[in-house]
Length: 220
Image (cartoon, rainbow, N blue to C red; front, side, top):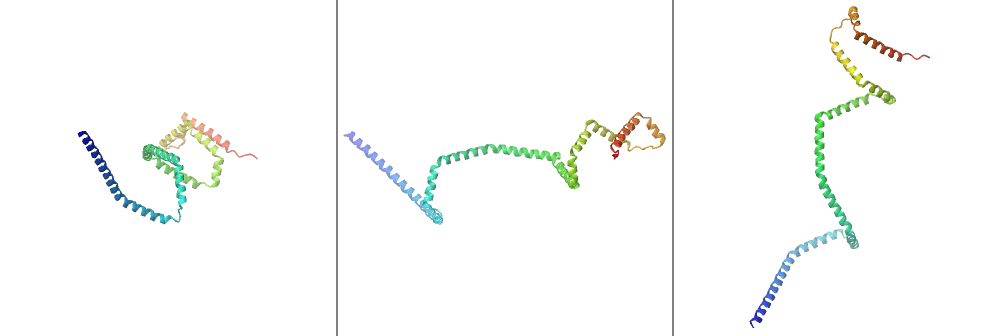
């Protein structure tokens, strides 16, 4: 008898708990509906207003066709999203490298400015402007016709031995030009006894001979 009463008590307690749980679920659902309904009504009213504004331009069949295309192309959309995520990750990876490259470029430009590269380039542009404005079209044409010869002359003049000879000559001339010069006949004859003077005169006469041969008038 007591066993039956205990079983009955357990069943009643179970049914009571189920009823209480069902009541709580009902109350929660009712509370949710009370909270959701105003929001849903506002959303529906807003959607209705927006659709009324575009109903002249939108057809229900177009919307259905768009929805079907979206469903049909879902795999492609997923691949596109994956690619966008990959591009975003790549951008996150390259952004620090870009910052480092920018900082390196700024440092390099600052170093070049400190060394005077930009001032030199500005001066070079001014020199180029002076050259361009100083030559006519005919001069430029002649320059183009003789550019190979000019470059060969410059190449010969920039040989180390020629440059050293010119450098030493200029240094000596700069020092000697400040000294008083005795142009009397005895002084000149005295200098002629110097082997270096005689060698210089001989070289000068040889060069003058070559110059004279080059300037010889053409015989008809």
